[in-house]
Length: 191
Length: 127
Image (cartoon, rainbow over all chains, first blue to last red; front, side, top):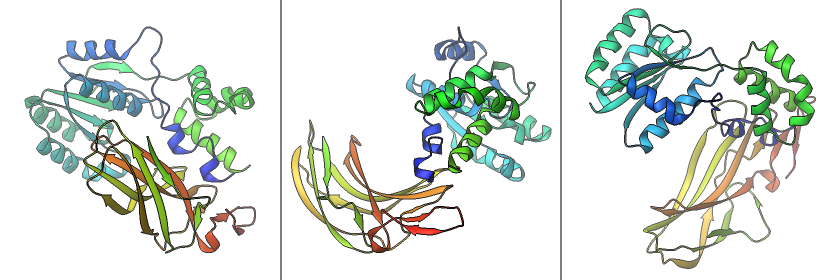
């Protein structure tokens, strides 16, 4: 199958947004964030939806009149993480909430430095794989139902065919939904 | 409502000069309308996008039809493999509302997409 026809191509997958667990909502998350004085962490292992949630949460905050400055760090940027953070601090206005997606890329010293520098800003929201850097706003988790739901939303016409493989795929990738979806892309690419 | 009309032809030669009929019916006259020749990648991994050419259509009315002559880029060709497709398109965008429409086109040798179908790394050409 050609890339442009693949039901799990990137632009289709990116349309699938974060789904809150029962009883949670964006409004509730924002209220909790305010109660935490806008300094909190979204925690979760790789491929659990942290980046998607933080994107949606930032859109929500902006729509509600907040100023946001976002920095995304990945493993390739670990060596320049401090420089990228400095750029974020220099470009953001003091009423901004600083958002750092990938706080685990900072070492302890860099993290302490950022935490100190960020005190003069309105807030600091980070995503991180492990708890401990800031108080936890929410934890992103996945289960087989999460993957089933993602597949049925992303590729509704293929979902029935794939249902029998979902549990094994989920186990194979240790709950990493992003890797599961990439694996499904590869499966269709071979057709 | 915005429309791009290319007749029945959606596949073209690299560097070909084409006539495009564009029309729009908007609630307010836009400040500017742009016809853009754009590309994007599709497939696995990060999606890249680019604007190859922009033709401004100045002093637009709320309701209008215009004919625009556009020279298409020479490269890259429209392409599809298993991991990546390169897709060309024309976009008509009203500013500042950003109401838009998009028509995908093919730019390639023989007015066809270059297709690498994979089994033996075979390269086919097909629209």
